[in-house]
Amino acid sequence: MKDSTSEEMVKETMVSYRVTIKDLPESERPRERMAALGAQALSNTELLAILLRTGTATESVLDVARRILTQPGGLRFLGESSMANLIAIPGIGMAKAAQIKAGLELGRRLALLDPEVRPVIRTPADVAALVMEEMRYLDREHFRVVGLNTKNQVIAVDQVSVGSLNASLVHPREVFKPMIARSAAAVVLLHNHPSGDPAPSREDIQITQRLAEAGRILGIEVLDHVVIGDNRHVSMKERGLL
Image 1 (cartoon, rainbow, N blue to C red):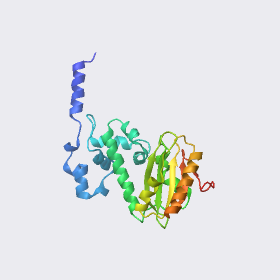
Image 2: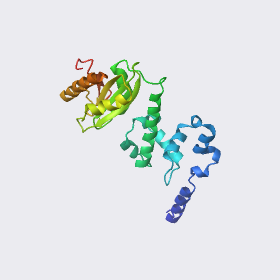
Image 3: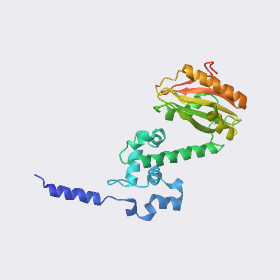
Image 4: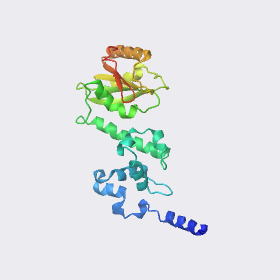
């Protein structure tokens, strides 16, 4: 029979010898390495550790970052996960999940600022590819507007509203106000159906026609309204509904 006291001492010893960032030589700490070598020199694990800032009682922040990146999909998993998905991971609370999503969103917005890397929208499939991996998993209807310049390059993807399980509340003012400020030449409307079926509803068609008319008045053409389902999409323009 094992001595329970001895087992407790072993556990305490294991916890006390957990390696933290402060235990590492300065040359191996992520922040110090970033300052000395630049962000491009860091691994994905190190970059994520900087966003997380702290570990848990039993894991260093590098261990937590490494565990997150071993999820199926790796780095892609972070971009596709909702706040709720991240919070469900042991060691990731509201604050850490928010830090991760904020960092990813800043990166996405920065990419849109560079004319050389801005996506170009030529077909409804291009719109779907831009948002499919994120929007197909949302459990509420999210209505967004994609702003395009005169070359059909994406200059912004703005969220307009978040609805209930089966409806989005959309007003022309909220759709076009940010697009006017960005000097968008045209827009593509898009929203998801949490059911996974992208077939447009009667309300979808009515909203589309209303927004298209508002766009004509403002001089911002509504090129299409794309409905996102589960790895499927429907273009209202292709169906003759716009």
